[in-house]
Length: 566
Image: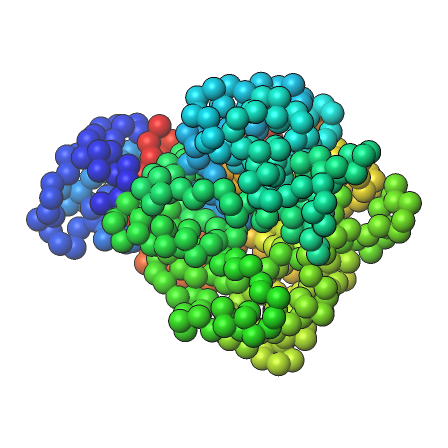
């Protein structure tokens, strides 16, 4: 039995009317274990059918229809839940999140709420006070250039001032990090240390390292941070999955999965404690030589698609460029304030990217590439098209991950080669102004061009997510942004790229299920599919636009079992 279900299923369920008691075994083996009645069930099937009721047996949907058709299916021991008119949608699927971060609250300093440098330092100081001298101080994802009034990263000297006796390593969104003097010293980094290829140590006016690490400089400190124990990681993932369930998320694609993550997730699933279905994008660090990469790709023979309903290999994740909020996305045009024809940063050359994609493809792996800028998209599509000539990728659903600044003609190229785009409108919530500052308002208006993507590629080739913890995890906030294109101040960016509510919901359900080739298993509420669903606090289709972001999950079911109830 899965986490959260043990107590909830044993007790009474109160959504509307009373619930009949459950027993260990049904007297009628053909009767459903659970029946939901009296609701507005958005099935999101091919006809966008709205039903009143559904029946669940053995973790799957038995039938969907009217109250009159479904109620008679209930046996004496069937649990009957009266929805009292509430809306039900398929379980939500985030196609790109680093969701373990949702379970790290007890382990890292949370800087997500910091508004200025002084506030960030105060949070670090308070966290350090709880730790023994010498213990590492780390953080989950946050975004100083967007969050902080000073629009910059913290220096090692500032970190030293609040943590002189503890090494500090502050992760951000994967392209920049920060370290204090003690952490740099432990990593063997000093003023004379040269910049690594594809990265840099930022320096002050005297040429000394200021503690900000860029791209390939990051692992030099990251790799010496002591790992968590297995028990700690299992607890972190349990907490994280519970956090997703509270938001109505029943499936997630883990965006950059290590071998260790996969091992822990497998233990969680085998123990029967998983409450979220996970697809993994395995992200090994590419060795310098192609033979080493080929050895990783051949591995033990397992490739994309290996696994089950709880844990499945999704593909290989490759990083290419940076980010539009980091001033590192690879752009066709030089950055507006560039004095040296600066176009962004690529982690590997276009030729090396082609090699990596080619080897993965020939070894049977589906590939997803982190790419943001339009020049980067050009080069990723070049790599996909070259790989396709060696071994067809047409039905393999290779992925452009993010593709925030993709152009219409590039969408057409992606569709021709059979690639999909999984994007995150949440970037335009608290970071749209930063995009405009770095790249200009016209570029911010065309960022995450959702309507055009649907028109050029079709919903079936798209999916939505958050890139949490870079952005908020709340799926209803993301859908609000899709529908309104508003930031927190109500400023609209790219109004012409707004989409309808059903399209937004499908990007989190029926379309998103295709990421892991699971459209016949989940994503809609139809007979024979997994009973993953969410009862909502309000009607997603009718609430005023500005209330979409405030919708919550009242109850979340995974495989017919309640994993969260408000």
